[in-house]
Image: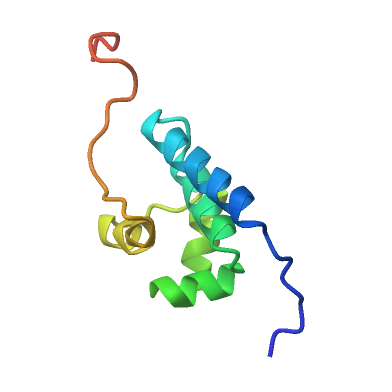
Amino acid sequence: MDKRVKKLVPPELASQRRDQFYADVAANALTIAEAVSAMRKISRLTQAEFAKHRGISVQALKQIEAGTANPTVATLQKIADIFGLKIGFVPREKLGSDSN
């Protein structure tokens, strides 16, 4: 059994963190690594707990959070589902500003 004591987070602070996360996602202000790490921290779970909860390996989660993984869409969807997000194509910058 985990003997760490989880600090109680006031509901207002938890709500603010979730709201900021969703705002950052909408603004495309987070990398995948940052978003996954933020989701796990908002959930107040360790990497092992979060990985088990989402049905992925701890090693995969560590690599994703470190930005060194090449996760499948299915793996990312398993992670994103808990926050009601879906994986899709998004523009890197405002439309029309990228000549590629």
